[in-house]
Image 1 (tube, helix red, strand yellow):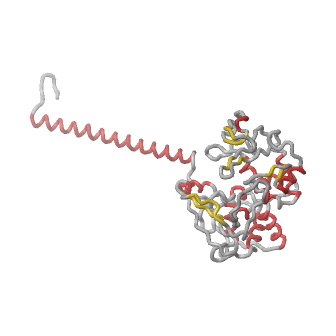
Image 2: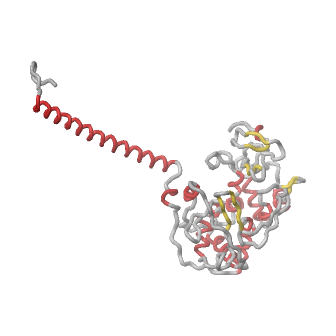
Image 3: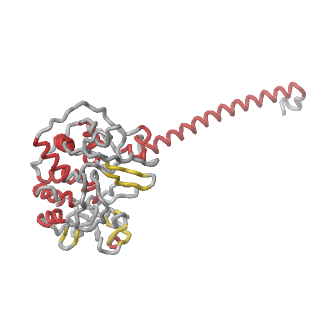
Length: 368
């Protein structure tokens, strides 16, 4: 170590000075290291916060949004009973999942036969994933006998079960969110009138991280929802939304989000049934050749000419709707943007550059 020119520092004094210098340098380095570490930690936390926010959001961590239950009682009237039956057994399609279905091989154009309506059944049983549509009948032990009216209403429209858990989004509460207050009340009134059925079902089993990701789906309905039926197209849009038409007939990207510009253009593939949903836009590749009468006949009979409609298209549910409502849905579908997208389940399946799916006639479609 050097000090004044020509003089060396040795001995205890020099070693003491060197030791002090080293401690000073070490202290300075430690201080800087702490600052760097703190900055690095802050950066990591910030990056994590941003990543969660722009990808899955905070609900998987914090839990689903939900509102407190109320003690409201829904008045039972003959009008609500009739309207509720019409909605539940028609456009709502509630018994399509919430009834027992004996083993049946699905056949095109043949309606399945359900038993013990409202009593629920297991709809998914695949290892770590077990989902049952619950027993809605007022059985006090295995059904809804102890549920309040608002527990029913919150589950149907907002996706929070009577016990506070997030309902698996196979329950279409994201569509039912648009139910008017009066239609919701009517559904609750009718379901309350069902005969009790003792039918015990397993509790849901949802693996991580899916069990957390579904917390993004529920949304509280805090404002009144009113629906006017005077405008045919608007009424048709309302019914098509409740019936989940866009949910099935709009292709999804790899993240499960609807592909922009492909609304109602079909191509969603159901591997279990080896079928893709149809293009129901008014394009020539869709249902542009349909008229009102053909549309109604297809829904009523499950056939377009000699060709049977295939599962999972629930025509056997929608056939319970009256002509005026079916005409309204058709009127609405005529207003959606035509999308040229060939989907033909009778043809060989191929990769589709337009929806990035794999379906009949898919290879005939170009990119968007």
